Amino acid sequence: MTHAERYIIETYSELFESLSSVSKLELLERLAKSIRQGGKSQEKDFFSSFGGFVSEKPAEEIIKDIRESRKFKSKNLKI
Image (tube, rainbow, N blue to C red; front, side, top):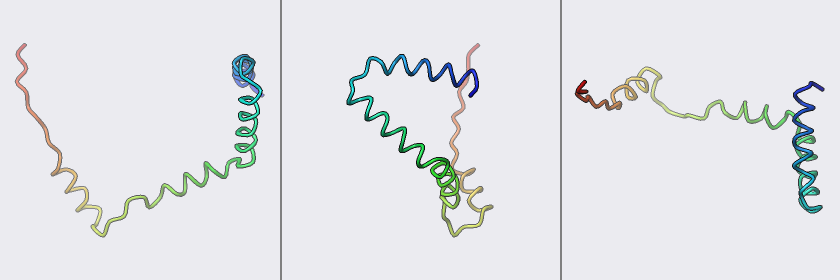
């Protein structure tokens, strides 16, 4: 455990002291759930992000559409 991790744990434990027993149990349940899931959730989220945009258009046409849709306003700045 690093020094930073110990500091974080100490800081949070001070906050938890003021919680009710029910809140502490809920927190324990959520922590246990996150431990059981482990890295699976992050890995799943990472790989599920691929293919999020589906289009039949080729990439060059999509890029062209995006560039053409940009709107710029020119302002005359009086300095």
